[in-house]
Image 1 (tube, rainbow, N blue to C red):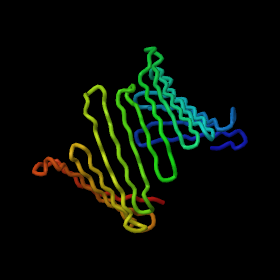
Image 2 (tube, rainbow, N blue to C red; image 1 turned 60 degrees about the horizontal axis):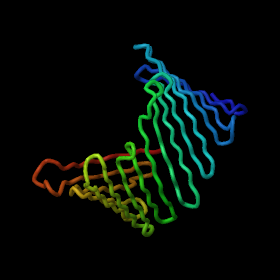
Image 3 (cartoon, rainbow, N blue to C red; image 1 turned 180 degrees about the vertical axis):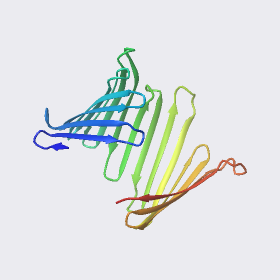
Image 4 (cartoon, rainbow, N blue to C red; image 1 turned 120 degrees about the horizontal axis):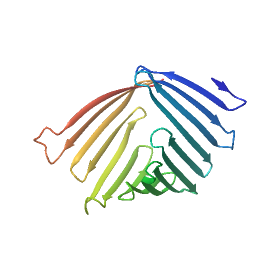
Length: 223
């Protein structure tokens, strides 16, 4: 149900797990770009209840979010990102009200241009660092790389390189290999409008004589 003048939307759902959920959304009422939503759930079988309150605030150069679980903890999770002329910076943090402590935090910086982008992230309480680079060479070829370092586990740096090649307007192939010798290849083709076939395989090049390899296929339907 929608009330356009008030900017309110009410959504009620009932799923096969017999969970009743009510979502109330309010957009652009208190401030332009601010969206508030309350999500309330009830499971009759166990009398379990849930109550969450979320905030989204979006401006041309800023996007911030806050998620509150009112009955578990209560806990809060907040993240925000700012951008200016291609440069981006963001951070996130979690807080447990009952324990009165920060449960986690992370940060990231990056730069985005029309044909390439790069980013440096620090996650898991600033203990896992990753640097990534993506480049669109032309309309057919894309390439990327990523380096990861976990300060808690040692000095080893994990490396990954990947590439994507568009064979024609309806199909492409992707490949990826990491420093552990695990290589992956995937092929996607549009069979008809709304139906995509995907075939992929992963091989451990250091254990070719062992049953560590994976092969899979998928169909994606879209309308």
